[in-house]
Length: 421
Image 1: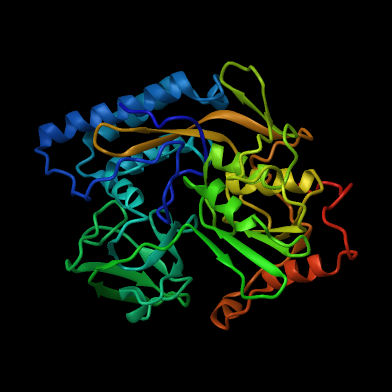
Image 2: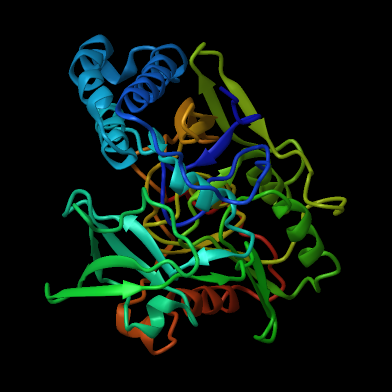
């Protein structure tokens, strides 16, 4: 078992993107899981289940396990796990058991998902869809976005469709190989079946961070995840920025990531040593979090006006960051209420190549607000409809630009704003 180094602020397993930790994983070319005999399969299932169950029992941040009888859970789920004949069945059982904790950070990602996550920033085989589990249809996934130039776009797949999984159909627990046709059972927004055979192609990676300077007087810093190098990148983008330039940090759809990168982003805007949160691990000893001045090569925080864009898929570090800036009166938050998945988690590798994510510490803001199950309420509500996105409109971004433009001339920081968490 190899534990990820350090702690992370990242929501539970998502098939949409990388799950960042405080150490970038060593990445090799993706290889499929070996074919196991029934006896080998049962032994591997046992090793995986016992590690997951044991880590929760001994390392979960809440020693009371949210009131769950963990020994009873073992009796219910272990026989099912040992009898699983494939990764999909095994990880469904694991996630059902972890779901008893009612914690969005507690989850297990199967080996094929881990292989895709570990190569997210490399050229890799893809069909070009971003998936999220569909709570209304257990086992199915909602199409969150479709990448331009992808096989999915060419086949007419659109945002809002549902991917149905089942016997003989592809599911995220299986590998994607360039040139190998996969059978997909989509359901469109009207409920009509849309079966498609798609052939994955190797696609170039999309950057984790993008700076958009196309609008006069505004720079939009789009951050897809709190991944390694974010603090250095943001420091470079903010260096020598004219004080009258408005800064918009776009954290929509961001699942979270490395704790040290969240601290670096906050150091870009908050004075050194300013308290922004408290975390409490299993021991119960509270640890005060302070801005550390780690925004790349900047000597101190910038004074530019700041807005942060969030939505319902902003999770974990992408919630704590806007909450800290909002509570400090340093930024206007625009968009939709965030997911409310804000705990400090850690990842460990499982014996079959899968990955367990488990909460290791609780988190509250400097004002004592616990964001878990609550999320961040924006100062200005703004959401994009599907029609907006198809037409290229971005109401939240426009609302942020307008909010910053409406501030008194010469004002560079929000002072005395009441937190809206």
